[in-house]
Image (cartoon, rainbow, N blue to C red):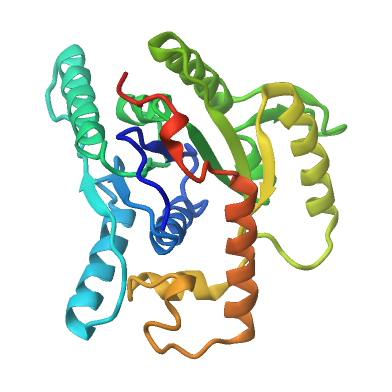
Length: 279
């Protein structure tokens, strides 16, 4: 069992302004992995209107109650954007709600925050509280456009794009607020096991971009139906034994991908050395 964290949770934000990249799926698997290692976890859904992570947690809670299975659960809160018309008042309300929720999870070892596939103040604010920012990215040039503008003929990098510029701004906000830093990880998700020219070109562009704008590039999950099937039951790859679900070869391969991902993220075993997110 890990040591208690002295009330300074490590904050992990899942972020990308492009929808459909697997943020909530990755978030839930990280949550479950940490819970099964014995850590306490708080989860926050700031994409409450769509609420994918919230429904995932709720599906899990219902399965645990109905079937009596040993499924660890995070402390979870969903935050809806302010409905106030005045921009300043709305942003103030959003900031208070997020900071209050983070403060209520200060006894947790980790806080996982899932953000929407769009740009808004609440999402940007959540990014600024990250110790670790994970950006899942489908292996396509459509998704890559959120990070970088490319010359279509040479594939040379022209300039960082919308989301990359936003992350840079939130890194500055984090440094100004408490001197903290953000470890930014871009996660190549839904990878095909088959070689393709597109896959090779994506690798070259992302490797060059990582050096230019300062993120770590890691491999995520392959394109597997199992990830979509698990959502309705509230299960993850780590719950197969407890739920008596037969393991297929796809399950085993996907489970190894998750183990590799957790190693590559390089989370602190005990986040007591980290600054409090709300300082």
